[in-house]
Image 1: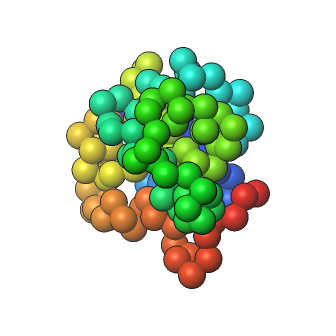
Image 2 (image 1 turned 45 degrees about the vertical axis):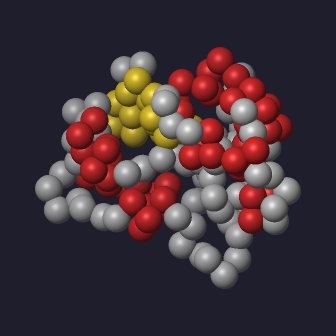
Length: 140
C-alpha cells in the first residue's frame, strides 16, 4: 500500500470522504493543509500534469463562482500566480505518492494509480464537487 501526501482544505466534507476511502483501502494518509502550505510555482505545477489550465481550478471556489477569475482566460503562469495568491482556487485534493503528483479525486484514476478497495466505486462528481450547492464553500 502507498503513503499518500494529501493536501486538503481542513473541514472539507469531500476531502474527509476521500481520506477515509484511501485509508479503508490500506493506504497511509498524511494530511496537509493546502491553504497554509508555502507553495511555489515550481512545487505546485507538477500536480496538474498535462491537464488543461482550466481543470486546475476548484469550480466551487468563491472567486470562480462570483466570476472574478476566469480559468479559461489564464495561461499557466497567470493561473499559478492566482493560486498562490488565493489557494482556495486550487482544485482539491492534491496528492503525492513516491514523487508522483495528482490533482482531484477520480476514483477510477486513483484505483488505477494506487488501488482502492473493492466496492469503493463512487462517481467523481460525488467525491469532488462541493456537497453544498446552494452556498459556495467558504474559506476556513
